[in-house]
Image (cartoon, rainbow, N blue to C red; front, top):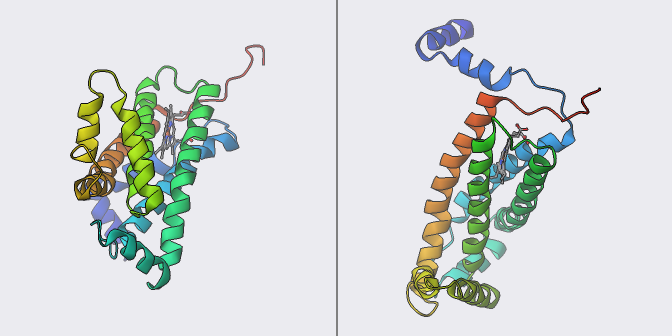
Length: 220
Ligand code: HEM
């Protein structure tokens, strides 16, 4: 019965070819360093799942954000766990992305034909940093407020366009409810949408080009 259903679906969707292309690929002999990309992907999925769960109780307004985070941590069932996974996952994400990038640099995997995979990787790194920067403000405590004051002030020292960038980020000259709304919007809509699109392209190119081989001495 299950074979008939899967045959029926395969004739219409061609899913077996997709499955083979994804999971039955030929792999060169690699090493543990090649698992860093998948580890980053695993943490990214953790961030998406726990992030969605956090939005159930989080309120992005200056008079309620702090209390809603406290409520999640102390009152909601397993809220402390969901928030903890998201909080520590954010740091793990940055560390793993950088380690994965270092592995790509050290083993020369950015070279032909993987240049575009590398470019999408650079964009992914900027997005990961963007997630960290916008997420840091959301608990709306003293640390968040002053870190974002300093962070946006650093952007302001950019020559010529600095004050313009600061006003775009803050939604005015000072940090306010508008800043919190903007950071929340970027954190839960703009950045995730861009991340998913770029990640799709990144993974497609990895399947398309195959994983690079570990460089060896010519005489070996
Ligand atoms: C959200 C962040 C990222 C995720 C989830 C991710 C995911 C992955 C995965 C699963 C692989 C295949 C397995 C592996 O080689 O480890 C891979 C390969 C690759 N990634 Fe990333 N990556 C990310 C960021 C980056 C960054 C920052 C760069 C570089 C700037 C980069 C460049 C590459 C390249 C060039 C490959 C092909 C490696 C090869 O063929 O040996 N990635 N990535």
